[in-house]
Length: 150
Ligand code: HEC
Picture 1 (cartoon, protein in one colour):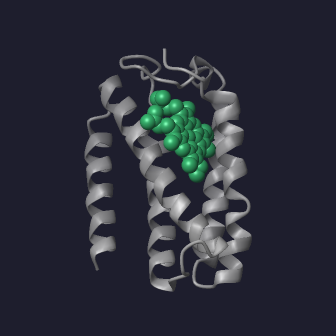
Picture 2 (cartoon, helix red, strand yellow):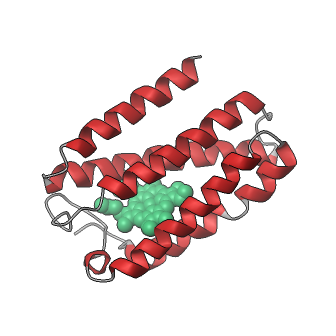
């Protein structure tokens, strides 16, 4: 299972970075790398749900499991105190002053991804669940991601 192996390697990598979370630059690298990996896997699920690539139940279920673990890990370890600067970042400083609202944005994505995981074994259910994901990404980016690096 090449895909599963890659997913586990990627997650181990992300978790290793997360454990070194005392350094702001590690947290920034972790969240940016994690977000890119999240984006690739969410796009793949999207393409499958729309029929742009053939639906494959095993691949869909693996990817759904992976994006759930990945998103939790990014939020648990990627935005710790002090990581508002340290490397070029698009994360707005308000993340660290408006903690509750930023947290609410995280919960929306995590809830949407849970539904994706529950529905991944069935194409129609996957399609319905994927419909809610993009808006949660955009909702948080609109509020908490700058248009350019600072
Ligand atoms: C709760 C807030 C939040 C949610 C939800 C969220 N993001 Fe992000 N995302 C951010 C922030 C903040 C940044 C900027 C990080 C930085 O530059 O340090 C970011 C950056 C990114 C980046 C750019 C990474 C880079 O290389 O700089 C991508 C791609 C991305 N997000 C994809 C996604 C996708 C896809 C989703 C939904 C499946 C998502 N994000 C959900 C907050 C969020």
